[in-house]
Amino acid sequence: TFILGGHHKYRKFAFDLSGISIRVEEGVWTVAKTMVGGGSICRYHSGLAAGSVCSATLAPYSIYRGNSAQKIKDRTIDS
Image 1 (cartoon, rainbow, N blue to C red):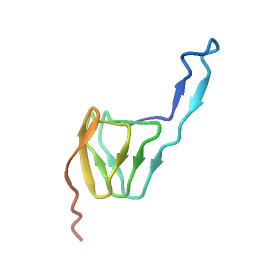
Image 2: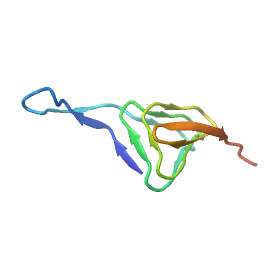
Image 3: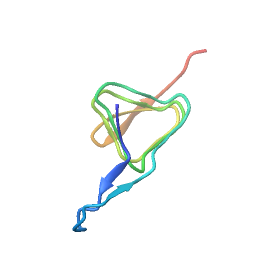
Image 4: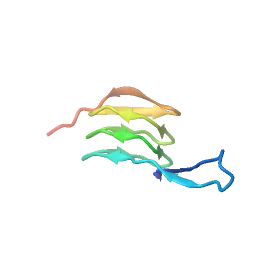
């Protein structure tokens, strides 16, 4: 998983680096070749499928896939 919390201010001559927060809550899982971008919130027990890109909020107990990640189903955890 690639966590990308910064970006460059491309309109400025100095091309300054700016940070944007990312929140990953308990029980979140991400699979190979995923990207989580700045401003994303991965709510508890959400999942991000292989090769997906997250740039928003993942709902709790939900599984997402694609670029930009879309919810594909609920995540049920057996006890």
